[in-house]
Length: 125
Image 1: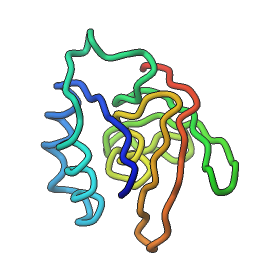
Image 2: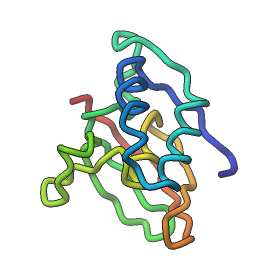
Image 3: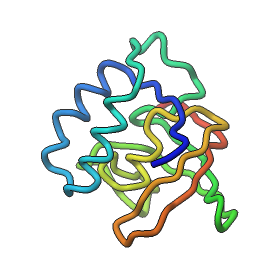
Image 4: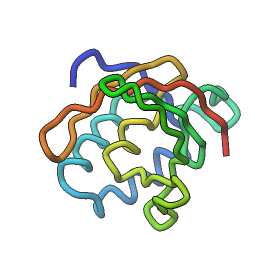
């Protein structure tokens, strides 16, 4: 991944996500582990309201299709596509964690394509 944006993740989210990485598909787990490794860890109180965290609702736009979507980032057992709840272990969930409003990221998908997204808004859950 090139042009990597800075990431901010709470200590709590970092530890919980790290604990579930062994259940992820290899490629997503490796990418997510890389993301966690470069993130700046902060306390819950220090997390900015404009940063994607676990259980936050994020609106993002696909930069290739210009399609906007809102999802809630959650742990795998809470994922529900009908409720727009996306698992941290899904490629888009792994891409979103730690991003700030206005940041963009290019994220590789399982089919070899690259998803380019930009965060538009975040509501903490």
